Length: 242
Image (tube, rainbow, N blue to C red; front, side, top):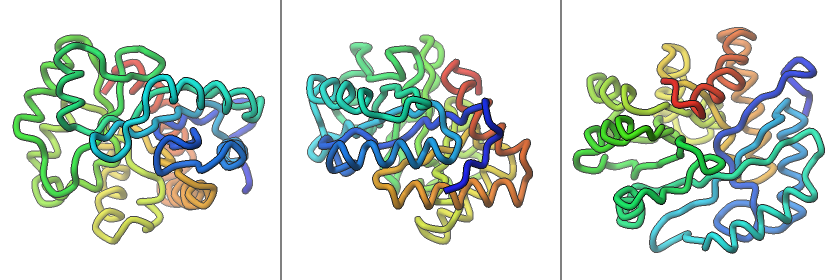
């Protein structure tokens, strides 16, 4: 895969499953290394591992996450800085962590990645996100193009977007997650609703899909949009800028 970004300036991936043996992402350390190498080839110089924290399905312990993180960081491409966060499903575990202030965040900072269940949004989610913002936390919303209540409610899009940074999946832009998801991802990117885009890579093949998404942005919106969505935008989201 050919690097799309100019040399010396790097993309930031806010959402990936490159840590092996924790969830439905990389199956072994060789896959982790291959995924990071493929992301580096696209121009990513910072990749955040965001293993699932999802009650009843994927709930790796902090010890297991730290062990996998150390192992992968030791073998990843030298040009890539590996960061750590989590993809937090908005469920009972998340809600408990929300109450006691222990939500896993990007490098232990104020920004954190959260996902919702596609068919319906949690009751009171906009108000909860507002309270988090007021407390100094910075919610980053994974793949907003998947959430069905947003598909036909522009007012809800506006209210939700006011409280969190939207980060669309690159593969969705290329059509790999469904037609409606592609339509919404492209709309969010074209209209400036999305702050950033991310790979959400679980496999090396996902990185190839992400490359197609980057190519679409460059063809449709130009190089400045690529920089905004893959470099400037992710860094702003980490700082809590919406």
